[in-house]
Length: 169
Image 1 (cartoon, rainbow, N blue to C red):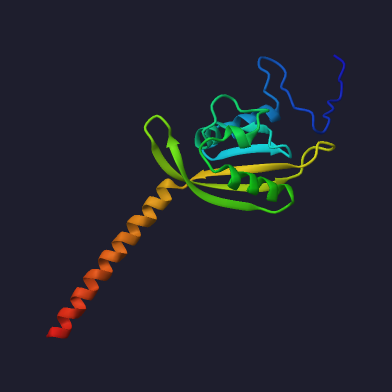
Image 2: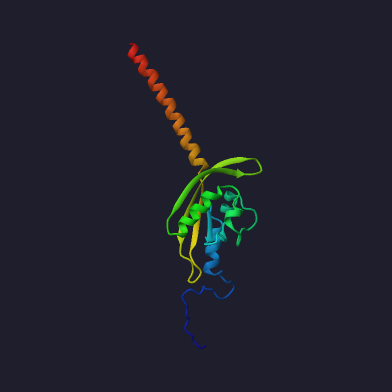
């Protein structure tokens, strides 16, 4: 049996031999990104979607795959001017965020709060800059904050009533 040295080239996916073949690292990475609970979108300088995961499609109101489509026209759930401004700022190297109330579920009219953060991302050589959008559903966080504020208001009212009673004594 002749022994042959194993050579691995950088950037080339590693595959196992034998019974099974492991998917390349890029496929595994893409599978993880596509199923994150946080929305993730990568757009080019023309606002065309390069990558979008399931959560982002749901939160932005995009039906179908969305890939290679204009995000500004496809995103039905959030403000177009705010989205365009955030992408343009990130294309120029700045990070921008905005929070907006939007429809979470068109079927039942359920609304929620979303934060969209646009981050500059250098694209592969020769293809211009890209922008990464992270979309977070803040509905539960805002509901908890409002409940805490309501509780604080109730406690402040109780404290003022007790203070008045002490002053009477």
